Image 1 (tube, rainbow, N blue to C red):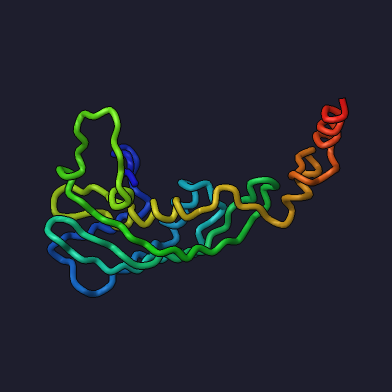
Image 2 (tube, one colour):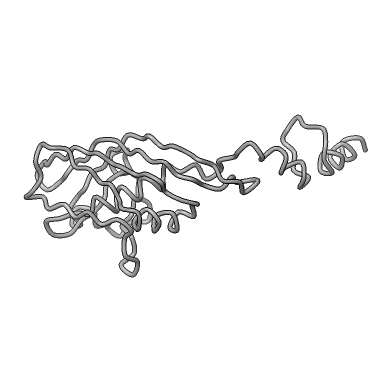
Length: 179
């Protein structure tokens, strides 16, 4: 995950100061305005519910965040455009690391380990758990979700799946194979 651009304000900001971390879980539950902004960011019809519940643990300057992300969203079918109500229930495992440890050296090729994949840099003594939750939601959304009207839309537009024998593209393919 990468930090959001400095020119774009995060939709959800939940700053966590390292000095205030306890053993109690932290919940991130965006309000209606924040959920509407997330829907715009991820090109969704709506984000009806979003909650992340995480346990934070500090080891030196690094912070581990482990828990769950649950959401109820409405997105458009990738084929027909119909509204699809979808639920998301994902585990969260994030690592916040000081920017100085994150800074890349001038190298041409970087090989990332599994631990590097969910490392998020922070500056100072606080990190934004809200933006990390937003990015995790974005990664959990299926960009190719299809609904009940998808097959009909494919037929209507001449798109067929493998094994189907109708539509103008299937006919053209049969003609090519027959020649």
